Length: 473
Image 1 (cartoon, helix red, strand yellow):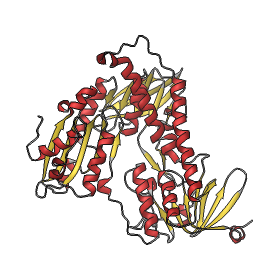
Image 2 (cartoon, rainbow, N blue to C red):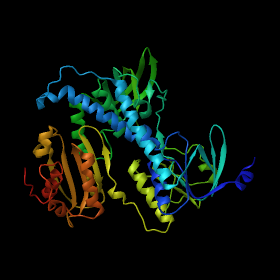
Image 3 (tube, rainbow, N blue to C red):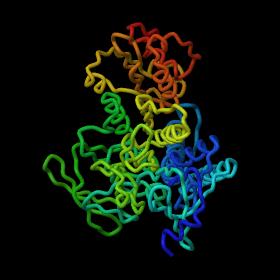
Image 4 (spheres, rainbow, N blue to C red):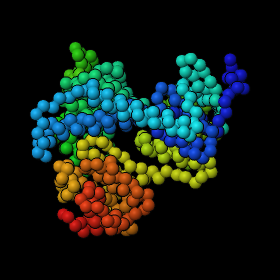
C-alpha cells in the first residue's frame, strides 16, 4: 500500500508528538489542557522516555539507596547508632529501583487517559508536513496532524576504540542494572553521569577509577566548587585522573584491559566493567529528518526558531534533539512553551534560569552564570560565599562539605548566578532559580526571612556576604 493510499484513511489530530519523555509527555498534557486533539507516539512499551526508565529516576533511586548503605556502614556510629552487621542485597536494591520506575511510568499512562491523549505504540517516521507513519511489530498506521512535534531525546555517545557491548563496555543504561558489584570499574568521563554512577558503585564496594580528558571535572560548572567536589569524592574513595584519554580496550578473562594515555605516557588498567559516559547525542535515527531537509547543525542537533519550529513549516522540535543543555526539565519547559505558542499564548523559556544539578554526595547545583561566564560577558561582579561548616542544620546532619556562592552584578546588585555544593543542593537551588526568574537582587535574598535552623540559611548568608556583611562567619 502506498503512503498516499494510507493517507486517505489516516486519523487526524491537531498535534502529533513523537517521543513520550519529559518533553513529549508534558507537551502532550499541556496541549490537551488547551483543547488540542493530541496523539503521542512512543516506541518503548512504557512512557517516560530515558529520564524515567533508564536515566534520571532510576539513577536517583540507586544514588539514594547506595548513600543509605554507605551511611549505615560508616556514619551511624557518630549518631550513637550501633549496627553490628550490614549486608548488601543488590537484587533487592535493584527491585526497589524498578518499582519506583514502574509507579512513575504508570502514572504518566494514567495522565494520558485523564487528558484524553491517544498513546500510539511504535516507531515514527515523518513522511512530510502533517503526515506521520507509525510502525510496530504487528502493524503500521498513518497519522495526519496539523502540527508535528519532535521530542525524541538523545542516546549515549560512544568512543572510538571502545564500542559498547552491553556487558563489559557499557553505557549508563546497563550501568543502572549490573547483576553484581564489579570489583574494579573504569568510568570514562567526569561529567554528571560518570560521577553519579561512579559514586553508586563505589559506595556499594567497587574500586572506581574515573578518567577525564579535560583538566577538570564537570566542565560548565563553577570551577572552584567543582574542585571542592573532586576532593570530597576522592576522600570517599573515588580515584580521579584528569587529562587522561582512553585509547582502546581488549577483552581479557572476566574483564577488559584498557589503554590510557596521560600526557603522552601510556598505561593499561584491567577492570571488570568500563562505563563510557562521555555525553549524549541527539536521537533522530529513522525519523526522516534528512529526507525532509530539516536543518541541523554540524553536531546533528535540529535547529529551531523562537516558536520551536524547524526549517520545515509545521514541524517543531524540543528537548535533547535541539541545541542547549540536555536536561529533562529544560525539555519540559520547551514543550510547554512550544505548545502554548502554537495556541497563540505568549510563552518563553528563560535559559539563564534553568538549574543544573549533579546528584553526588555532596550535591552540586547551579543556576545562572558562573563567575567565569559573567566576566567573559564583560560584567563586573561582586561575589558572596558561605560555608556549610558554619550552618547549624548542616552541622546537625553531619554534612558540612561545601559552600554557597552568589554572583551579583556589581552595579545593579541583580543576582546573576548561584552555585551550591552541599547537602540537598538540588532542593536549595529552587529558591535561587526563582530569584533569577524574578530578577531579584542579592539584597532581596539577604532580607528574606529564612527559618532557623535550615540549610537555606546558607543562601541568605552568601547573599549577605555579597555586601560584605554575613552574620554567622
